[in-house]
Length: 200
Image (cartoon, rainbow, N blue to C red; front, side):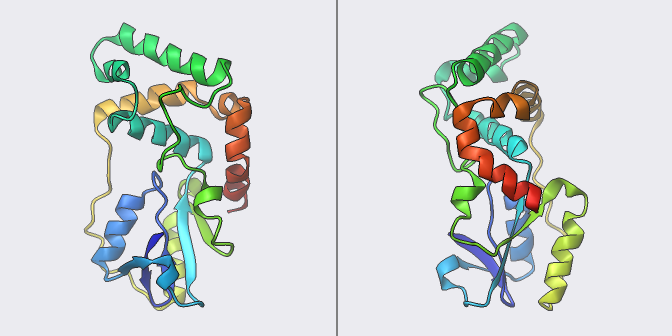
């Protein structure tokens, strides 16, 4: 897995958890990109995570906009409100009522792969919750412990366009944590992610 390292502190990017922003930020501050197996044994690892429900919905949204979903779902980004509502209803039925995590033509991708799978080889990694309100302070404290100063903040945050945000909000209203965790397969795949998140 690729990472960014400086002074024996390494960041492992997790998709849909501000990974584009932090990867660009660290590169702008002279962190080196490498593979985790190239790291020194005493390297401290960290990453950023979100509530698993939030990340899952963000991942579904991203996959839709990358064209990984059936062709008919392209209508979700049209101006036809009724058509969008009908497709959302179909998604809800497939995922929540039929006890399948996604329609047959949809797979779990790098955007939604569980933390417990991505990070399973990194037992001592520090996971910083992006939605805790103090993520930046925790990150800067880690940097300070390794004699690292972040000097260049000129990197812009990656902000989704309006159609994508609107669609994310629509999905988030359907796929709440309670609704998703009532799905047996989802809970099997993501139960450990909630443990990781709650312990961070």
